[in-house]
Length: 166
Image (cartoon, rainbow, N blue to C red):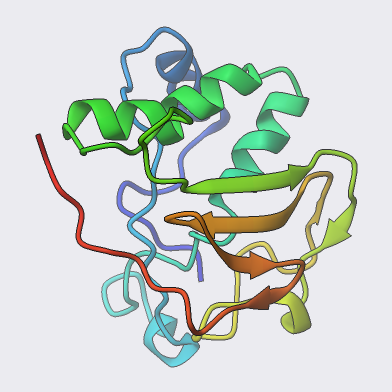
């Protein structure tokens, strides 16, 4: 299931990546979110589809790393919200400011939960984190100021809007 590009590497490689985030060699932390069906992930490394479903858990993983002291919480916000907006010159996003679109995630930093089939929101129905216990949980998500996710429930009425660049 875990075939990524670039591939998962050694502990030394992971340490180097974390250092690159902290010293700003890496500008952005993001995911391409490739929710392949399990049937598409089968076969050899030459046949199996690359990538995985990560968008639901990417922020939580980074917050876990911050809890472990690998990053500061401020660095997580910088790399996952501020820098994408700045580098791509996205209009009125990436910060909490008057006149900006309210794209917000409220996180409970003390809620422990385990990834399981019944709390995976990906349409592909699986996660590389199944069985892993996290110590942060997304409580609510707002898109353009509208409540899009509320304690386990996704609103089908809330939609994003066209991103504008300045």
